[in-house]
Length: 253
Image (cartoon, rainbow, N blue to C red; front, side, top):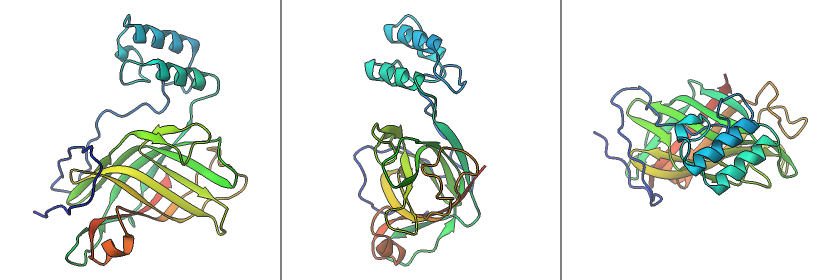
């Protein structure tokens, strides 16, 4: 059995059992795409807010609202109120194409990439900094390769794609026009072979750059040759240091 490379990881580890075949890892309970949307109807209603207050006070169980995972606190209630004044974020599901790969280096030999399959879900940020084309927060990740699995890692506040307020997710995909041609940037907190890693990278932006920002209207931008690395990409690619490289080709479903 291949020994996982030793990669500098964040203190928190997410336990992962790697599959022996190309089957995808089964995800744990997934966070709601729209916090406080108890009926999953796409908006946070006054009735949802009343229910959330009752759950926070302990007079109703968290299971009564499908838009939360645990008993809400004051910040959670404020977040739900903020969403009720606008709308739930636009969600887009992406499917990896056959060209997607993952490369695993142990730091001693030149590695070969293996196929990577799966899906990921993002939500669209509409309030973006100047020169931004898109801002997508990664909400769900479900990847698998023949000998390992990639899972959601650290659920955290994502600053890069949400302006001025941070969003919560597992990573971020953004694109801007500061240095033409437009470029895509991606970062993600993922668990690979028992290690919680922060991967980052980018690639070309092949969506329609007009009119910015992207508002979730069809067609969603495709992603071709987005490269995420857990360290210095060239060192990992040439077997000079341990780590992982994910190369993603994805289209909206």
